[in-house]
Length: 416
Image 1 (cartoon, rainbow, N blue to C red):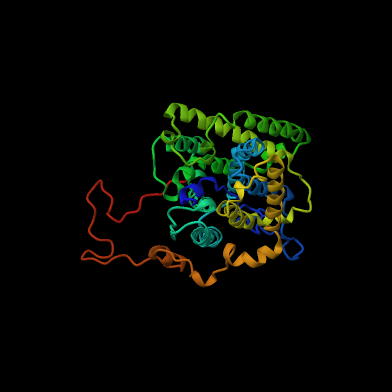
Image 2: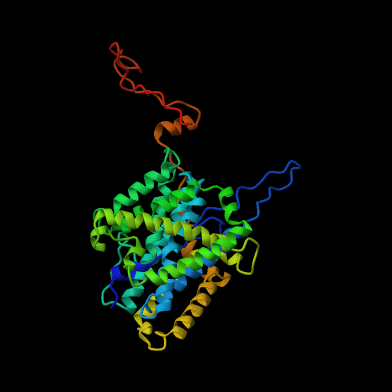
């Protein structure tokens, strides 16, 4: 029997819909105008990011597929290597395509339909699946994300915090400080809050990146450096796999649960931040820049992410990871190949057409016109709100010298 908490320890993110940006934003940009009066034309998508997302989702599927084969050195080393950076990779890309996010009505609705609703749907679906196949009781809790769904919950909160990080002077330093402090004391498992705060710096870093930063990793010399760095990372993972707890890779436990003091834990987290970022940019450096046969599949990695968990959980529920032939090097290679096939198929159009109702629902019926507060609504219609009446007229009694009237509105500071 697999417990809910154990099942959720290895779920990692990748989110992308039909829009170019991760989850819901459209990286293709707004339509461009034409001086000749012709119909506006959308900018073409950059195949680089779709290629990166597709290759990264394959890493996710492979990582989850070999999670139960840790007795095989090849599987164990690959698992540590993949988990060291594939989660930060998607969070950085998500943050990059969230730079223009605001709480406007349209974007707020997309946050609900493309993140909030899939979270509710798949939290319910996975919990029910767990009950039918692997457990004896049904437990559905939106406060305790199951397996893969924690990332949707985290993304919802990260997106809402975007305007805050865009206003403060040193956003990355502040985010790193919050992250490091979050592991110094237990905060409970609600919303996987340790992951939400602990991984926040990667999202904030993505917010700070600009297109010219990605031009650096697109240089030919960067590809060569990236290959050497990834090869070295895999070698380091092989050397470290028997000397570190894999719980570090899940970013969900405070220092006391990992058996270290706060000084040691903080140093370890800083080292993991550094290693993750080096591997993220090394991976991006080897991603093809041109359009390939899998470029279009990169637009639908959210489908592969949320659906492949039914396959990987089945491997656990049916005990297939305990089969003798799987716990060999050829068996691990076979599982990897099958995982690559599953991940690819889940990004195809037939799957998208069948599952778009759950991952990209329209839900126009659920929304109303944007509501403004009373004063704002009146101003929007071109008339000021009527002031309250009193015994001294609409303005009230005169204010004593040196004090503002109770209803006086202070001048708002200009944000530059």
